[in-house]
Length: 324
Ligand code: AVI
Figure 1 (cartoon, protein in one colour):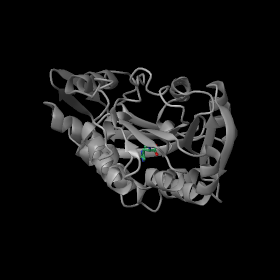
Figure 2 (cartoon, rainbow, N blue to C red; figure 1 turned 180 degrees about the horizontal axis):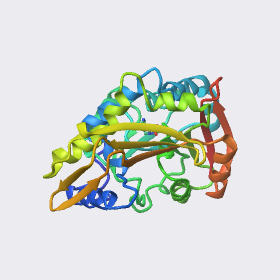
Figure 3 (cartoon, rainbow, N blue to C red; figure 1 turned 180 degrees about the vertical axis):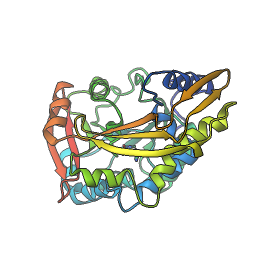
Figure 4 (tube, helix red, strand yellow; figure 1 turned 120 degrees about the vertical axis):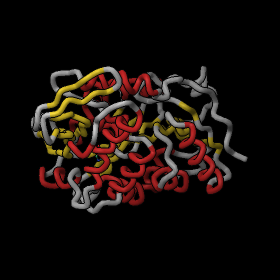
């Protein structure tokens, strides 16, 4: 049995309904209404996200997998033998399996995720496939300060590899992304590695297509946030009165996702009311796109050495190998 019990509840920030409600009301009371994208991922939202990854327009997942497959031997040589892998967000999918298969005798895999259930099911799955790897799930929220148990990372002389795939960093603002990189850097000792997937700037029509897939999966993903609010709170909010809208904002180098009100409406959520004019939007997500140079500059500002970067042939996506 190579799954250790979750080491500790390092963070008690599992989004409780109270925090969810406070965030919803705070976001909707602003002049430019917003909702935090981290609330996309309830059970239905997580399933929809998986489905987005399989749409023909959303190139990110399959391109990153291709880059990992194509360069695994070089990645394994760079990392060397016997490392400990940390991942923010629990991966049971293809990407972590490629790493666990391709690296030279990884010792342990430490997934850090907000959801104990997701951690447990992915850990069990991986434990069966990789009996020689120690799986040590930890409950924690990487959007906040990452507090690993005292001395946890310093207790072995082995190299640490932090894996942050999927361009999840894109959903932070550049300031937040820099702060996140700096926090990871502080967890690492000299020579440790951050292997991070970052989506690249590319022609606008490709970006717009990726966030407006023909089958409407991304639209359903965006609208599900309203269903989640409606299912959780006492409200007259109904997702059918909103439309999905996503476009590339080239000034800010980001995809913006919005929910557009189809009509004038007054929404009551618990004991508060929010007014919408027809056409008014709720800004639900940003997905920043980086040039190689732009991301390297940010990594260096966070005190990483930029080492090697791999891309696919079409230069859609990048995988950066950063060292502490
Ligand atoms: C998770 N994240 C990197 C995705 C992205 O591309 O920004 C979330 C997503 N939103 C719409 N489609 C996918």
